[in-house]
Image (cartoon, rainbow, N blue to C red; front, side, top):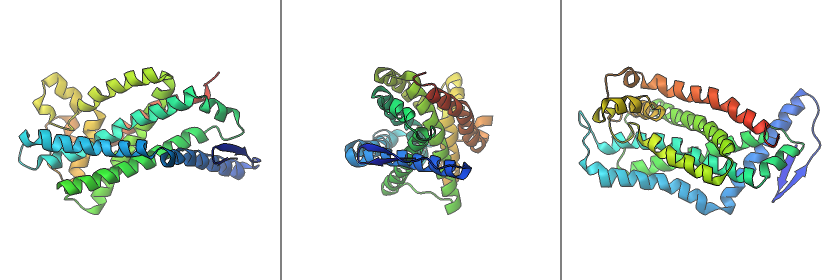
Amino acid sequence: MTEIAGTDLVVVARPAGAAGRIGWALTDAWTMTRRELAHWARQPVQLLVGLVFPVMMLVMFAYFIGGGMEVAGGGDYKEFLFPGMLALTMAFGLESTMVSITTDLNKGVLDRFRAMPMSRSAVLVGRSVADMIESLVSVVVLLLAGLLMGWRWHGGLGAGLAAIGLLLLLRFAMLWLGIYLGMAAGKPELVQAVQILVWPVGFLSNAFTSADTMPDWLGAIAEWNPMSATATAVRDLFDNPGWGGDSWAADHAGLLAICWPLALLAIFFPLAVRRYLRLGG
């Protein structure tokens, strides 16, 4: 079991037995989570920028561009935009994950942790728990900003919680994609190259407009984008206006909003774990 005291790591005797090993792994994972959360207190500006940036994007698209947008069938464009912005925020969260992983990798932090008598799963579990906590805070901040801007959800509490659950599921999948890409890239300059590619993929969705307004081939790609599935499903659960569509992807957005993240997890979770276990090998 490993404890963090200030900036120093203190190694404690490892408990024996299956139950002891599970408790040891959970304690180490929580220790690593606390390490990540401690960065928030030491670097609050970085956390605030991460929380404020999606709100700025929401304001920019709602008021600077949204004034000229009309939703087919009527409805407030802000209510159409808001679920899409939530989905994009969850997807773009992989950037912060990649930066954190690459920073620890280049500073040798991951190698030091792997050399210590601690659970080998603790580093990745701690990283994922901390990122999910930050993502939940980001969702809450965006929800409050949306309410202040006039957005409303018109479904029940259960539907609203289900929408938040789909958003966090997408974030969890993108989290493991970010962990894998961060370790695969290895260097900050390569991370920047990946970040540049993330934005076109994110914008090639129905977050801001309907796929029907795009050329057929481009619209088909946008409709099958995982972010489009989550955005459409969240709109349905919040009972916010949408452009709809007659494609299979549009008609089964709720199913795809579950299947896409699970498929990404099935691919990148084992790849990330394998990559981590082979570091320095």
